[in-house]
Length: 166
Image 1 (cartoon, rainbow, N blue to C red):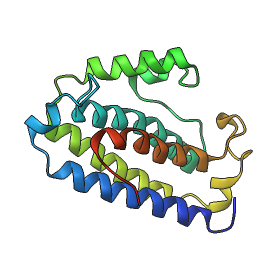
Image 2 (spheres, one colour):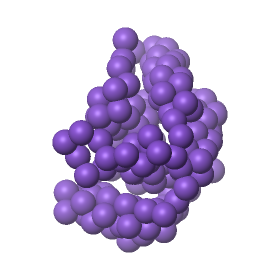
Image 3 (cartoon, rainbow, N blue to C red):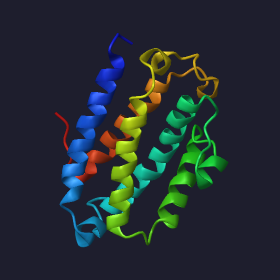
């Protein structure tokens, strides 16, 4: 990864946040709860899903800042998200647990979580962000890869919501 990579990663994440936030901010309860074409998911389901996975990323970045292993939230701590079956189990648990969450709260949690992630990620030194051996609990992956996975995850789900990327 090249110099100034941290700046580029955070700029991409900020741009992505702005696109998502602009699209989500104008939605009401009815639009957020409507099933998406060719899916059993709603916009709210996707936002809750992204928020729940975002909590794992936040836990990793906070652990990097504090100098200890991450403490993962709730059910996701019980499963290894690197195994495909476990990811599916976590996703089902997320959907079932947050099914009755009001749209305004789902949106606010996602929004506040994303902004918090941007803020704390900016506190990580670029060398630490890019060093694959810096955090042993990442099994040889740099923390930057975790941030890029957040970007990719939003892109993956963005097309279902009609959120495009320039």
